[in-house]
Length: 141
Image 1 (spheres, rainbow, N blue to C red):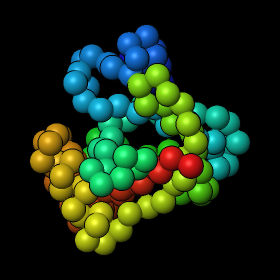
Image 2: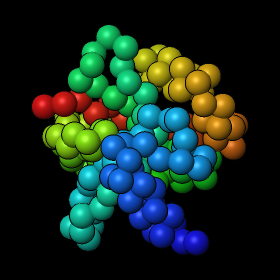
Image 3: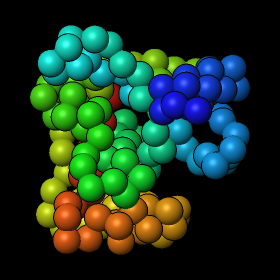
Image 4: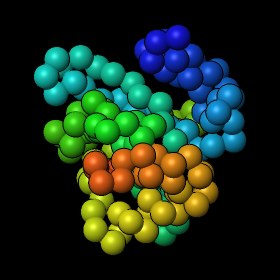
């Protein structure tokens, strides 16, 4: 199954089940991030796990892990090329401001995600010495 087909299946499950999906993401907090290709101008939807900010209910964090690949995912570049996007969480769709989290704050957020979902720790091991997995804050506007 291609990545596009796999994503399409996750997106369909998400929308059919009020934001819940099965398989490897069963029980995990999921978001659909709508973004525009910075080169193509095409609209894309990317399903991803997120971590909710415990102090700010309007902010969630997503992780450009690309399953531990040596390069960042295309969606990362599309989001960081702009300052806004739309997301779907559960049955709600809304606009968000986009910003990259860096330094100690990034490390704290990523480590929390890796503690909750050990796959993220594995991704960090795969990218060690190659790249630091970016953390993106998405804040409701």
